[in-house]
Length: 300
Image 1 (cartoon, rainbow, N blue to C red):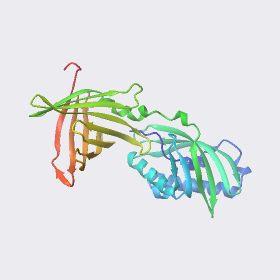
Image 2: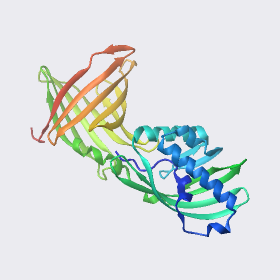
Image 3: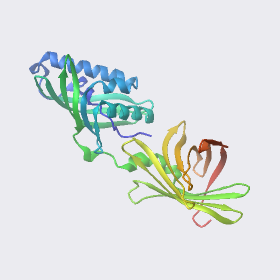
């Protein structure tokens, strides 16, 4: 998974080659201070240290993401970085182009393009506009926002790694057969699924599934509703070729539970599935599976 950069990275823009006004025309101490903050940011980012990154912002900082989400203050910024690092192991800062727009007293402004390299080698670039404020001896970020939000990728960009799931599937147990189907929406901005649970030839339960991109959390999420009145919300992440869905369940009687579903795509026509770490109302339940899902035609 290669989420588009949801988090502020333009502290590093001064580390690139300035394309605007020559650096010597600005206060050299200010340039040195901004450069030092940039170096601290790079170090903290590559160590996945969300707290240290948040401390490079002023207390009442504002950050507006490319998707229009507004983060206020260090606490929200730290939480956003922490989630980004959790969802993107192995991410690192790449090359940066930058421009210093102005330095005046305790304020400075800049813009730039930051390149971020993900674990699989994919590189995503983002444009930013940033304002710094000098607090004591440090230059900290006061505000930051996207300069070109219309270029942000659509949810389909983030969901493309689930192409293997699209189609019709069946898994058969000793007494229960589960049939499921997944298809793209028109613009591929979400995946729409349905399922049927058949026991001894009779329909026992059916339900609907919606899978989409959550720009706030920075990950894929799913919502499931079954005919018994229960529902579940899941957060997806990929590890070693397998997809894990951490689910929170609400049962028809109001009890809450949790589980982890694991999808292991074996090849184009087979998926191994299991449900582990299951509990309802504090009671531990046995694992389910693994079972093998087999691709079927629409007429089967």
